[in-house]
Length: 325
Image: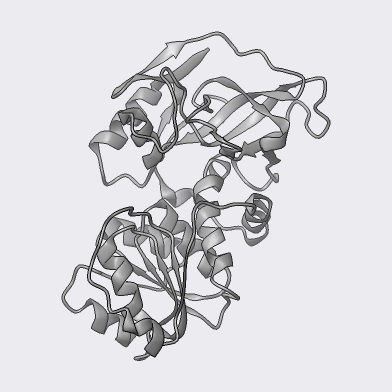
């Protein structure tokens, strides 16, 4: 079978490997769609957050079809369409253990969730990043159609947050300098956009919110300046959720606004415990996340997909897929 392997820091190739055997509690899966994440690039560069070793098959954003099940597997059968979580106890699927970037791969039954029939292979491979945006809206207590939401950053996570917020009925403003990404944000439900790098940014937000600021602010860029700015664009008693990650960065911030505006703020990591709800939400709302995928390659050219991510920073989400998808 063909498999994308990271073989050493900054070295990768599509290689021929044997189809892996399955254990009693495991499932053999045929990859259908796999997304590339910034974390994959960190893995390739040798600086992932937990220990790992080369060679490794990446791929933690994926959808797949069940080919074979182990003797102790009770909830799945061949032909089932599934996605799987990537944080597995102390291991990370696609990082410390090989992932979905191959024609066939194995996973334990307990990691997997069935895809509804109306969620496509492409949508399935977007469940992992979308779950982070969906989880952010869950953590912004009682977000609904009465809210005006401001999302900083229109990367995959920010765009997922836009889509989830809009699907819950909120009015959504996206803060993003890229015109191409603003176009995608509007396809996903954003009502307006502002350039956070412009001199008049704060005034534009005030105008768009009737002078009050946003009742919910999501910071998904991971930039310290945006993290600080969130305090200024938030309305009185607004909820702020920090999604973007920057460890060690700093920026001046008007911390007194926490008190004067009676703000609530919290940080989140990933999407713990909400995958079933995320999949059900996608199915019931009919959100179309496919505009996130800006380029697709066949699995046999997964190395070219990686190279595209390395070379072209305008890409939002690059996928590689099998012929059957």
